[in-house]
Length: 361
Ligand code: FES
Ligand SMILES: [Fe+2]
Image (cartoon, rainbow, N blue to C red; front, side, top):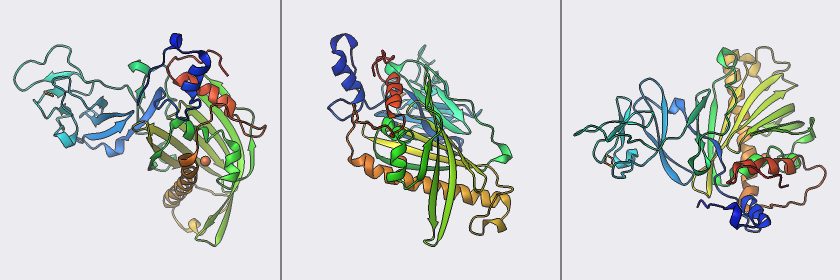
């Protein structure tokens, strides 16, 4: 459930606890930011998707020109749900309400009714959207305010890169906790079994962007017999708590991978964590992995992508076990090798009600 905090009426230490969880080990559920809502590839023409995010029902569709609309599933006329389950549908690229047939375009404007001119200024409540390689994101602003910062530019793709593989996991969680994983270097060894985990430089924060880089070695067993060793350099770009992008270079094979970790709050308890992975075409690998060298470049790159995504998914499932039982510690007892968790926590404050972090640390 969303709560509103008022700076004037709450002492700073109490307020800080509320924002960051405090003794009540629950974080404010919906940090401001860009959140994944849909993959354009699953948005067929005429299709209407309904989902829950931030404790609200939303609908997603695209018009005939391809513009995507993400809107609250609530008709401003007399309050009908617009969901497919209630009878909402897309006709000629426009959303038609099941109750009296008011019709909305992809900007949210009411453009027609069946029996009278549309009431002036009638609009759906829409969320600003951004698209990166067909992944559709929508902005969730504190008290509905417009975007305060943008997602990064779309990376180049084309024939040099595999298709995107997408995997969604739903579990009780919070986007601050899932994103903290990327700067919690110590857990990489103890939960995931990585070796030689070493930060590269220190994490940097620039507004809504946090960058952290680290190297590690990872052993993976295939089919219970073949041990694979990967030497990896990873650069993590966090853009708010719903969007993390990891640029991964594996040195023994010479493989380049992109991984997106996209956490969207569903209802204040559950999150959808969406993993998206993409591998650069492996034309001249430094070594071949388990017979893949016999396959054409495109086929083996696709197989590698699915394989790597399955490893990432295993990692997340290991984290889910921990997340499901842990409490949020607003003032953790950090040691010198924990990675930049303190810096990350200060970075996070900008995404909660009150805007600036006011220098609290
Ligand atoms: S409630 Fe949607 S058209 Fe009346
Ligand atoms: Fe992890």
